[in-house]
Length: 324
Image 1: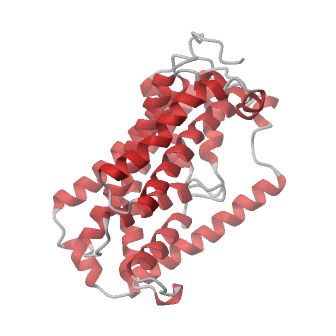
Image 2 (image 1 turned 90 degrees about the vertical axis):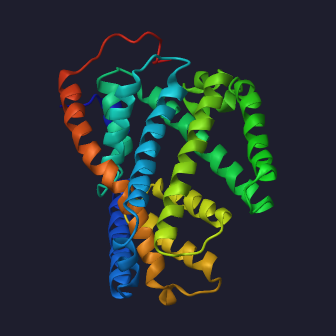
């Protein structure tokens, strides 16, 4: 299995590779710190977990499954205006990407390039533009959620209006912005994905649903451990966890540390890192484990399918010009 020169050009080299490996080592140390603190902090938290309602544990796992499906659906919605990619195909590619993000370097993004360049014969520029458009959904929804929460800490009608207003504005504006030369250079061929307001709205809605699943999973974990956090704080935790998990230095450890430290600050402002209660580290580990319980086993199954597709090579001819 070899990639074209164009595909290999998209792989991390030199300094980027060193930074990602360094990021993985730091992340590994951070997750060890979280696990050690969670284990050494006493048995109270673990006893609460053992005594938790099985329905709550199942709900956390269900949130993880719904989140994974929503992420695959976002890739489906964003590419739909220019190419009819199979829904289940993108679910498989997304699961493999999620699994490989646990690796020492960000192999998840590379696996997307690998599949779509080799199997779909998309260009590097097109896949880059596609990922940029998906990134826009992250920035838009996370930004709207943070702004709404800062303006209105308690979710309600006012919060919903503050959240929806900038998203509606973007849905109206993006097709117009897509025509600008600057945007065309930035999206690298993917600007056509910004021209269909219906699919843009769908992608934003799916991203908002995904954020809701993260918040619900964190809220359930907090309730199991008897951590009293207002809904607005849980939402800020979810936004932080989601954004930090996308950092270029690696998935492992960074998110768990961010959740533990921020949760402690929200519950007890001014608390030092060395003074963290083990409960907050247990919260981070429990929430992360609920996601991994879905991502890892389903990702392994999808990886078997992914390998077969890569070996088989090109899929059926595309129904749209994805190389433009």
